Image (cartoon, rainbow, N blue to C red; front, side, top):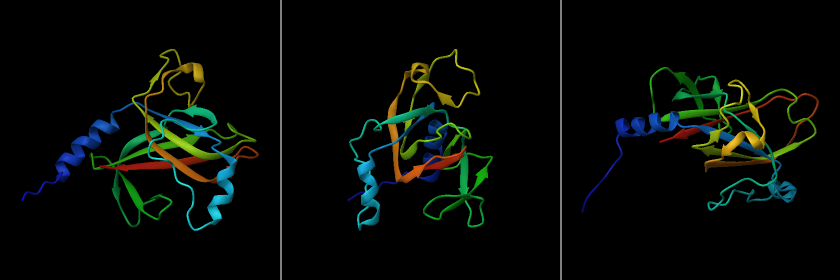
Length: 168
């Protein structure tokens, strides 16, 4: 018999590597057929073998990649109710934030967001540019996380933001 564990120090070391990676979001309209499934007992969920999103609307750079710490009074809230605060020191929690500029997807519906790791963008792109044209993506990288949500119609200059928290 044997036992094995990844101690906190090892988790933090892995999180530091992830935090230093190059990320890219793919925002997608997904499949409108998913809309009717959200009311049933089993909402739709992404397939584990997925490699891309459906019906991509745009690529976007993360606006924040940093470390978090669990905090019941934290200002960073996730859909499931978990709360976090920013951490100046590395932790086993890495936040990758998507914040689309106001009005950037007016008239579109968001159902799916893919997070790609080890992406390569055209070095000629301006450093602060968030929305990335397909020609600006030299290598998309590997799909690291996939998020499906109820349809979110973007209207009238809406601002859309989502925190992804990776726990190692």
